[in-house]
Image 1 (cartoon, rainbow, N blue to C red):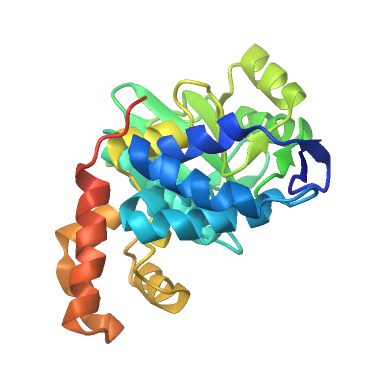
Image 2: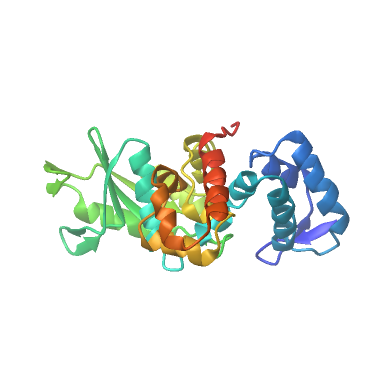
Length: 279
């Protein structure tokens, strides 16, 4: 059977990919089997990957909200838009939770011009200029012109001492992060010039998906027990991570939801925090 991907291209349907994505959500063997038994008979020639995802998500949600939340991670990142401000805030939280100090929105005067930093991250003797490229379409690829542009910015700020994190420091490294993908040329160029990359599938062993699952750094937009307006309100209150909501449950008081809903949200959050996903 052939299906259409998000770019409109017709490709062969691979059941193994669907099975793996369900398994990677933390769904058990029987849960995966149940979802496949329900979804596969509904598939037809030319079905889009979006339709396939929606059916699988709805069936998975009937079994486990937290598994459905993990399964929807790529979509949840899209909800950190449309401008990408909350994506930058989320990236800063990710760095903080793996041991970095971070600052956002700083104006940095380079040799030639002034630059606004998406995220600045520091750990030990490393200070990173972090450029975030948010995209609203999940299959978008970042072309090689973007790392070229980022490298030129890093060159402009290199060799200058800045007062950051209460001390004088210079930028030592650059990092380009996107919620989608990089082209092969982007990867080749960045690897050659030492620009670190992070995307949905790169690097293979430490990409966004694995980083989030291994450290339980799920964005608040993952939660399936909240609607879009409720998630937006939490974001506006600077609640970016599910972890932050779980640690400060009073944040739910501003959503005007009843006690039963609160309990459902917190149960899903707790499962996301405590269930380990196999690599």
